[in-house]
Amino acid sequence: MTDALKRLSDEGVAIWLDDLSRKRITSGNLAELIDQSHVVGVTTNPSIFQKAISSGEGYEQQLADLAARKVTVDEAIRMITTADVRDAADILRPVFDATDGQDGRVSIEVDPRLAHNTKATVAEAKQLAWLVDRPNTLIKIPATKAGLPAIADVIGKGISVNVTLIFSLERYRAVMDAYLTGLEQAKAAGLDLSLIHSVASFFVSRVDSEIDKRLDALGTDEAKALRGKAALANARLAYQAYEEVFSSDRWATLEKAGANKQRALWASTGVKDPAYKDTLYVDDLVAPNTVNTMPEATLEATADHGQITGDTIRGTYEQAKAELDALAKLGISYDDVVQLLEDEGVDKFEQSWNDLLKSTEAELKRLAPEA
Image (cartoon, rainbow, N blue to C red; front, side):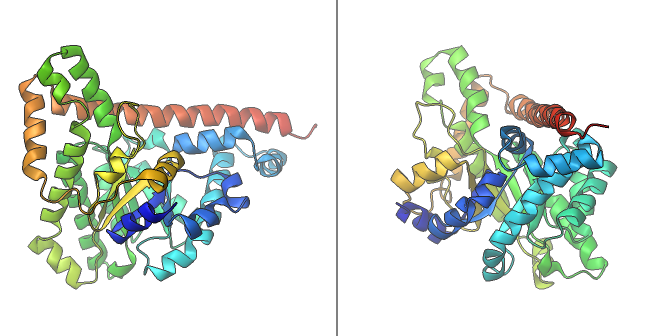
């Protein structure tokens, strides 16, 4: 069942699971996926934690203890989520050691309510790194305008980062610039660059969802012909940008000092349109030194019938650019789409966090000992 997953790994694509829950940890499921399905990392986000903790499975005792201590709801959530990330990091530690720190990593996101506050994001990233206290953690920082200087600052302090919610090519280049700036700051501070790692999470399926909606509204044959092409084109041009930046003289200086490339990570790879094959954003985004973080359904689909045929990115850049140009000719604004998706992404994570606050607060009240 895992031949396709092995082929994907052999092509240089690290397979990460886009999900985490205490049940997945304690049941042995995560260890099983690492052992049998070539999973070498885990990503989380506020929506994933909201779903996991709201299910209640495995969290009752810790919630009762937190209620007895009368902690705030914000502190309770941080204690719960960092505990899960710490345990997952311990399970993945052998992978981390075997890959010299490149994989075997677990991501945890800064409070999404801080997405537009640089100083608070930096402070939160430092706090999360301290709380989890595992070398194989990645702190997730959104690629908002306020997030960019925070990324450079946090990298400069030697903390490894997963940059999330990247939709546009321009913003992706700014993210890579922030990473290099952070490495330069770390180097000036005398830090060991070889210990700093980063991935840049470039979101995929949401691009098709939004652009397909606009194409459907046009309803022309030209519009129909472009359905399902924008997300892959966007991601492939992102890899072209990655190749350019990480072959520059600026990068060469850092690489000589021991720095690691910031890998492109394909996020939001679960297919949302049933008209498309369910492994579309895996099969068609294969290139060396990348990461694909998949929801479990996509992981299982890839294992069952994924078609991994080698590199499906390099050599496609002219076609990808032509497809994005064709959208512009139809009046679909790329800049408008990517800004909308970034705004929606921040809002969705903030809403999930607020839902998590409410449900956790209700549980703390229910479990609080009587006075």
